[in-house]
Structure formats: C-alpha cells, structure tokens
Length: 219
Image 1 (spheres, rainbow, N blue to C red):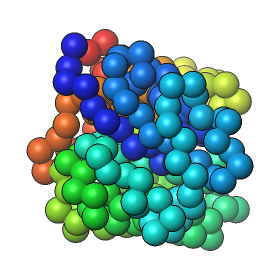
Image 2 (cartoon, rainbow, N blue to C red):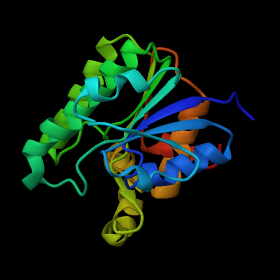
Image 3 (cartoon, rainbow, N blue to C red):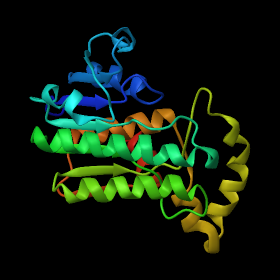
Image 4 (cartoon, one colour):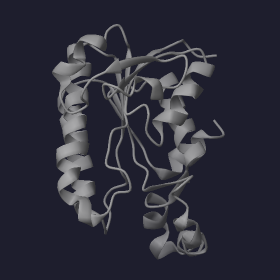
C-alpha cells in the first residue's frame, strides 16, 4: 500500500470524480471534494464536502490545506465544437483557479485531466486544455497531466462503434502514432490512472498519454 494522501478534488461529483473518490477512500486516502453550495449531499460518503465556486479560487482556497494533492476534474460535459466559448470560461478558468489555490496551499502534487494533443479536431477544446497545462507549469508545482481523448462509460458509449477502425489504424505504420495518441480509454482505465497518479506523485511535469492511461489499469 502506498503512503496515505490527503486529496482535494475539484469536480468530485462529476462523471469521473464520482467514481474516483470512492476508490481513493477504499485505498485509505482522505478526500475533500469541492461542490456547488447546496450540492453537498452529492459527495460520495466518506469524503468531506467543501462548498465553493470552482471558477473562483477565493471561495475555496482556505479549505485546501492540509491537502498534499490536488485533482482537477472540472470541465464542460459532452464537449462539442458548439460549446467552444465554454472551454475558456469553465475548463480553463477552473484550471487557473485550482492552480492558484493549490500553489497558495503549497500542495506538493497537482493532477490535471487535460486532453490528447495535438489533435485534428476540437481545436478550441484542445487549446484551452493546453493553456491550462501551460499555466499550471508556470506555477512551478509538480504536476501530472493526463491526456485522454474520449472516455468510454455510461452515457458515453457511441464511440464503441469506432473500435474496429481504431484497431486497424493502430496496426498501420503511417497512422499508428496518431491512433494511439487519440485512442479511446474506458472509465475504469481513467480512474485507475488517476489513482496511480495520486499514489505516485510526479517530480516536475509528467505527461500520461492514452497508452499510459490504458496501462495504469494493470499497474
């Protein structure tokens, strides 16, 4: 068993966070979860709810200490090109707020769910996440950036139809690298990769791409 961590999760009631928090608690970690005021009951049992606004660090930064790990999961649900303005006003703004709060609290490790890059589609989304990475890097905090492309799970199953095409593209040398970088990961793989990142803090900046996320499930 790894060292017990005290983890602050921004986005803990969302698609990934609601699965991640129970896993962290099962493994002996302490968890605080940032939630909108009035949504405290949505936090998985065993975690401490912290009401606040994920876009404004001043509403929750005082509650980050004594956490040693910050996990940033906030983002627009079901991203699409039509939601481009929200990628900056929510995804990027929340990354900045989380980074500011973590730096002020002297958190030793920041875990950020970014996105696979470079990519031929969803350019506004990729740009916002890349800018989030750059901002977090500028803070000088040790960080892990996980870069999935699409996370398969409940309510997110339509890309299963693309799996045969991905299999073929990964076999062909001209398309292999891009297909692996932009491959699909499962929700279980994503949660496992986050747990692994929490339990194995980075030194400086660590990038975990799709193959690394997939491998974490068997680590």
